Image (cartoon, rainbow over the protein chains, first blue to last red):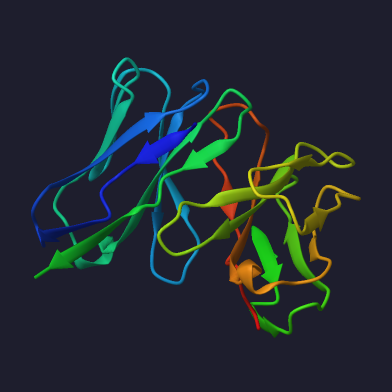
Length: 109
Length: 114
């Protein structure tokens, strides 16, 4: 079966750095997405990786290793507004997104 | 309209009733999707449409139907609602199916079936 695993919840301090891991097993691979979802709101796109390596976008970076079925999202200089759930999703061979349950990130002052 | 809209925002429904959730996008995206989101689970695909006039089944299609008469609209119908269909429903769209096409999400519909 297809499976996406990520931690349920993480806590970090304002101004610090946090890394959210995602491991996956899917039928085929056409890219990995990270989305941010604030409580009660819709998911919004953060990043897309299809090749191995690191993609940097401001305070957020995303890494992919296809051979290991592994990705992480790195958030730097954490702000209170970064408190949200972070969703990892893999596009399978049918071009459908398989979603993890999300990691709830709690930022403490 | 800017992006994707969904209606209603929330609804309480008696079991056995028929309900249509509406979704409209103004981005001229070819692909549209319906997901449900339940606590502790990832988003699950109900139905999708690659282009106007075509639809396909996702991971959890039973009890739901969709239509795609034009590019902009993608309604989701529950023919006879059951309590297990209590969930938050998100509509999404993307330019196409290719891997780098991010999906844009509507604000969601919170549905409670009693």
